[in-house]
Image 1 (cartoon, rainbow, N blue to C red):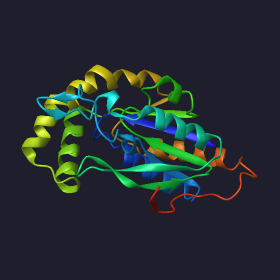
Image 2: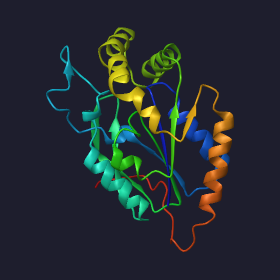
Image 3: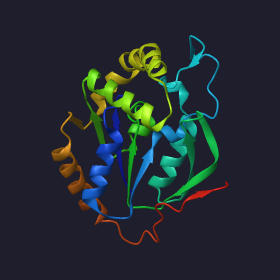
Image 4: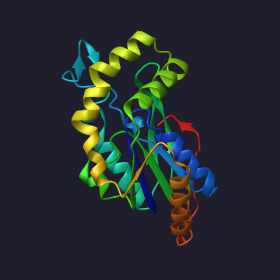
Length: 217
């Protein structure tokens, strides 16, 4: 199985870029996995800033579960991925069945953070977008999709998003095979071509499962 990691700051366009690649590949056995799905069900007490949870710290993620799932997917197995509700900041009881599949695109801010996970990726990508553009994108997204107020978005950006980006996230760019700027169309074409080439080399893996809907597991 071919595994592509897509990292970058909040609002850098990771999900949009992944969808561009998937659209160009046009293969139902290419699946998108979100690192955000692997937020811990409850954050540790030390991950609070001014009484609010810090979702932008590496410790906010369930790394053991993510490593287990990626390793099993890489081996051609099936996993029950968690589903995270951003409106309630909680992991839902339902899960999403993923795999086996030819290619996984995994996107998330800390996709390139952990060395063990980095070593699983066949291609590592970092989206480098200026902070003002990322903030505006995040603002629009959180108001429209996550029912957040303008004040809460600005407060979270200054309390956690911006400082965590500088302290933990930005330096992971050094691990990328490909650093992509704001214009992503050409890069999406390049990555899609590589995915097609690699996917065509897989034979005899068995039936593929992409999105079977949520389960109660």
